[in-house]
Amino acid sequence: MRLDKFFKAPHPLILDGGLSNVLEDQGCDLNHSLWTAKLLAENPEAIIEAHLRYLKAGAQCIITSSYQASVSGLMTMGYSRKRAKELILKSVLLAEEAVAKAIASETIKAKPLIAASIGPYGAYLADGSEYHGNYGVSDQVLRDFHAERISILAGSNADLLACETIPSLLEAKVLSEALKYVDKPSWVSFSCKDEEHLNDGTRIEECVSLFKDHPQVFAVGVNCTKPKFISGLIKHIKESTNNKKVIVYPNSGEAYNAQSKTWKGLSEPKHFVEMSKEWAKLGADIIGGCCRIGPEHIQRMSKQIRHFVG
Image (cartoon, rainbow, N blue to C red; front, side):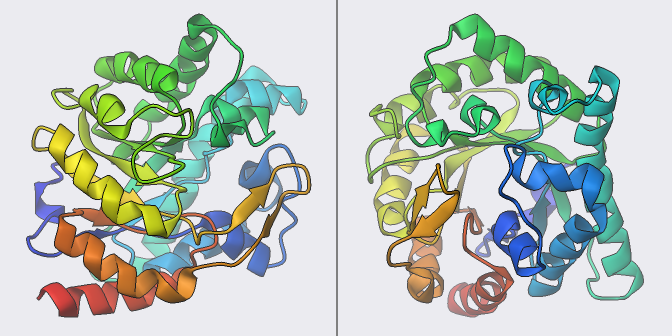
């Protein structure tokens, strides 16, 4: 699928928001090492409903529930390798089902994009290490881990691959190489600790430069990062890209406790919609939300951004 038709200047493409917070609102218990991926086998209808809520809110691209679904992680939970691969592919099938339902009910008129989520190695560890990137494993371990899931999802019906919440230069280099061998457009988004650096301390320009001429990566940006850092990051990213799309989908600004799997601190969602106008003005081509950003934020953002830039 050609992506050009989804980018109609001056309007940015609208992504969905956090999947986990919607699932928790629906009563799902996600206190598990597989996080949202555990519902692929246990409660797939909840995932479909979560996707539908974002489609109703105006999302033009929904991200699958495969962020924490890896062959290694699923096998650790007792699934066979064959079943693990089936469940990873199921994340795309559930997104397709949500799209079909939304179209059939005339909730939406245009078919949205489906992005297959590929989370960092730290998501598999389920210990919060995606927030620092210091995994203590070799390059080869990272290559093998990512290559298998990329291969699985590249063969799916997803429109694109979403490599997200990447916290380190090392993991970015591994992904840059792995994505050269897939026949599907991809984006790579980093998790950052401030408006200049990834969580491992690498400057954002250095990581973005890895993909400036990449044949398969059409967009680079940031996700799961505090909203207050996004404007500065957009400026640095645009200085380091070579006509790539810029994607931003921050979290609410709260702090995550990996031990209790809870969010604490003051949140910033009330400012999210207003801040997103600035991101669009600065040149963000794709805008959405990550953890703790819900359908109501996406709906308001979609309406106000389009009014603002139109």
